[in-house]
Image: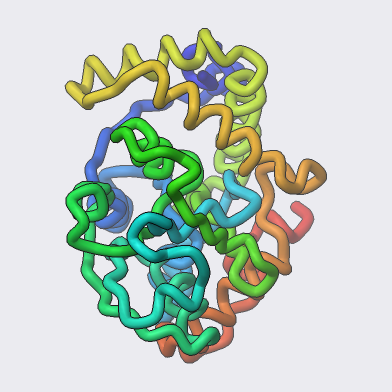
Length: 278
C-alpha cells in the first residue's frame, strides 16, 4: 500500500518488488547484490550475523510472536503434557528454534517432522501437533473444515519465548552508505502499514491483484483474516511501532546462544543501528 499510495515516491524512492518463495531465496538475492532490502524473521537474521555483522535491521514489523502450536482435542491433545511422545510438524525456518527451546525447557520430547508451510500433514493426521502462524496457517486449518472448538492452541507469546517475527533487513555496508535512504524506506513502509490497517478493503483488493498477477493462489476471506491478525501483531506495542526493542533483541540473541547457533556477543546497536542517533 505504501507503493500504491506513493509513499515511497514522496521520499524520492522507486520500489521494485521481487517475489520469492522462500526466505533463503531472499537472503541469496540480498547477499548477491540483486536486492537491497529483504523481509525475514529475527532469528534468521541473527543467524546470518553469527560470525560477523552481515545484515542489520532497519524496521521491525511484528511486535510479538505469532507462533502457535496446535493439536486436535479429538485426537487427545488437550494440554502441553499431551504433546509428550507425539509427532510435531515444524517449519525448517529459523523461527523453529523458539519452539525447540520451549519444548526443551518444559522437558517435552517429540518426534520432529519437517514441513514447508503446509497444513496437509496435520489435516491428513500424519502429525499430531503443528506449528502455525496466528495470521496465516491457523486460519487455513479453520478453512479446511476443522471446528475451532476442537483445536488446542498454545501460544509462544510467553515472555522469554515472545520473539517477534518479520522485519526488514539490508546489508551492513549498504546501510553505512545509505543511512538516510534506509530510514526513509522504513518510514514510508510503516506509513503503508498504517494506511493498510485503516483501509482494509482497499488493501485486500490490492493484495489480491498482486497475488493474481504473480499466479499465487489467494482468496479474499483469508487475506481479510491475515490483515486483521496483523493489526494485533503490529500494534502489540504501539509505542514501538516499526522499531526493534532491546528486550526483544536480547531475548532472541539468548535463544540463539542457548541453541549454539551464535557464540559471539552481538550488540543491540550493531544489529539495529537505528537505535543510535544520526
